[in-house]
Image (cartoon, rainbow, N blue to C red):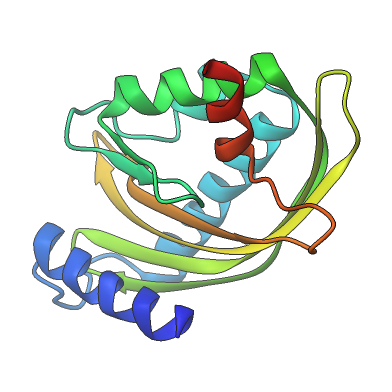
Length: 172
């Protein structure tokens, strides 16, 4: 069900942000650039480096991210605030992309895959999440950026809280 939902959303996003025509650039070069974008995101996340992480997103009020609990972060500033709050409340211990795939179109790339991350609330127990992600990337001023991003975390029953849900609980 998750896979069909991700495919459906990816198609809608593709139609919304590009013509879905074959790319004019070399596909291997585009994929290599997007793998580098993912590596920068993961490296920035692992170091709690907000500025570097946010440089992977297009600075636009139309950029958005959907968190694993369904929270919609609309705009670059909302995404930045979310990660600032996340990094202040959580310590990222380890993480990596387990699977990654790309569909290249003229003007856009749809990425999807599987990730694993280990983190802990500051002063709390370690948590591990394995999940799926999908995103849309566009090239602006010669660089690829995320313009839409979504993650679905699948946690063991002993760890029922997502980072987003944990943060919401602390804000009450």
